[in-house]
Length: 155
View 1 (cartoon, rainbow, N blue to C red):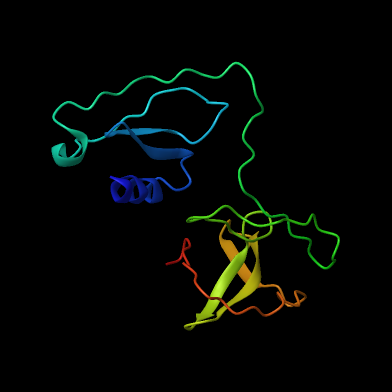
View 2: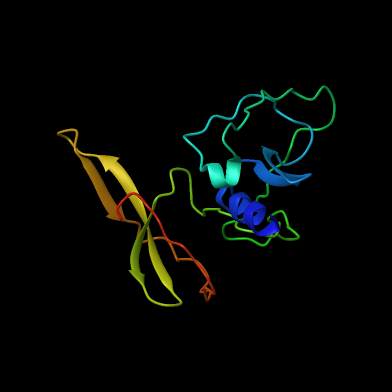
């Protein structure tokens, strides 16, 4: 059962939900208190894992506690005065880097390097979108990627 709950929890990454083994029954719920409450909906589920009649129970919002602060990193451009962080929780985490609007374009990818350029997006005289590289940007400090998933609008 632990393999099943672990597999389901990994697929719920970023949702705030986790799978639990409760006396041999699989429960999918919010990771920790305070709870937001609400409903979880699902498409048809495999009976071998969820039984013939899975039950969806509406959650109850917590009345106390402190709101969750999701794992995050604050970076400081062109200085070392950014807020430090101690790490990210174990498991699959997703985060992105970028200025407002994530105005970067991937220009090259190999097994351990992603090369990007900062771009500016403006509107031309006829209303068309004009995207140009920003020649004033010195770039990020080079880093070696040990593992990465690269996604974006222009895949």
